[in-house]
Length: 255
Image (cartoon, rainbow, N blue to C red; front, side):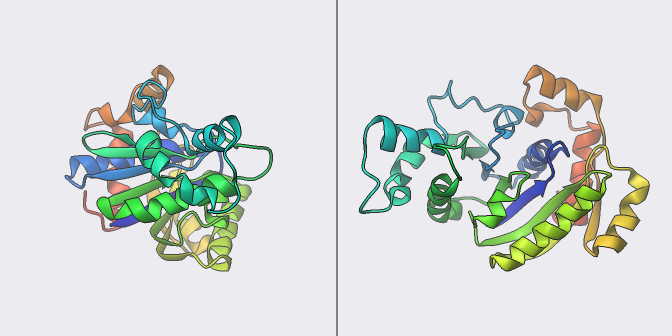
């Protein structure tokens, strides 16, 4: 099992990159996958054709609210994050033929995401052994890394745009990963769809991380997203899909 985490500033195309990675791995026969939407914007579900409400499933934050606020459950004694794990499996895990899906959701109370993240971490520790790959769409603000939803990942992909803030984001993300003790094998940088292709070598030399390539801009992807259609159903000759396939091949995934 390998855990792949995608990070980056908002608007760089993180969620579509994760969805297209999933398509690459599924079509290469690398299922089953676990897709985890740790971003409160919750874009990944729609991009892979998941409607949690229609499926009768809930985000982890929703389960925490229903269990410990609406139903008056106590949060003392056994940690709530441990007691809710069975509910995450039964009511939070969306299952399909090639992938399963979990979402953290929005904040369950005012304040931080500490309890939802702790609940997700506990669930992941029990679930991940069942999958070939775990793909995590992480928040732009680095909450995933800073709160250690997972302490061991294989590859981190930081999606770049053409701004100083994006380059600073890479440096900060790498520093946080080291400071909180996250173990990882590789830290890669990837050009988002707006990233100028000619800046790839500059990014690699400046940031000193391997640049895997650029996600191709594709109007068909925009049309799918606007219509709420799953990117998993894009044709196999789609330019954005082929660019992500090339990026994964450059990271030695050979999909």
